[in-house]
Image (cartoon, rainbow, N blue to C red):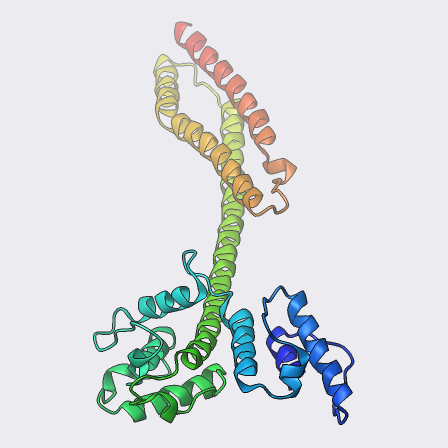
Length: 326
């Protein structure tokens, strides 16, 4: 029985042993196997030997069982560096703080009206219980409801009966601590899953944002390059009518371009460089493959076309000035 308990608590196998010992020596071998396993886990034991277990020393065996429960079920509970008991109590107090009828002061009388259990259910799984509609005076009914929901919906084992806690002047502290520790682990694991889900959702949203940014970059870069090329082509094919009025009109249009369209393109060129930098930073944060835009939509391609625009622009300005002087 002790070996089965250890394997259940530790999720480990103790190896080969006499599953149905009949001889006293076999029982001693099993007991020593269990005690050696306990010692290897660094669990301190004093004044206990295989003989105490085999002979069924009630006081020592119960103390050993509590030590094992404390080690494997409760001791890993940690809230702000407190002891397991203090940390578990603080967790209960924080989770039930917003419930006026609940005041968790200990692991005894604070629980005998059933409301603390109902509050823990409501704060974590409000879909399973309607706390506001509870008859707060029905201690047994509330506790039975909480125990049933915890077992059927959350998977918390039935370690206690209602009679062990409800309307008892001083319920057993160790039994309650052990049972409530199962609640802690169940809901803590649930919160870990929810937090992991939120992290995955955040990651997906960030990746979606990065993909949208890439799409926006390519679309805007393509539009800017096409606009620059259209402008160069327009200037290269432009003709003068040979009149002063036509030359002045083209000079006016050119000045309007410099004050308006050119400034917009300068801003867009800067924005695209910033956008590409943001994309690379976002992907780098998650250690994903960096984004390299297609060669025809790269910043280098933009610089080449921008250089062409600048040279054509200078030639255009010179031609307009010469035509006006003539």
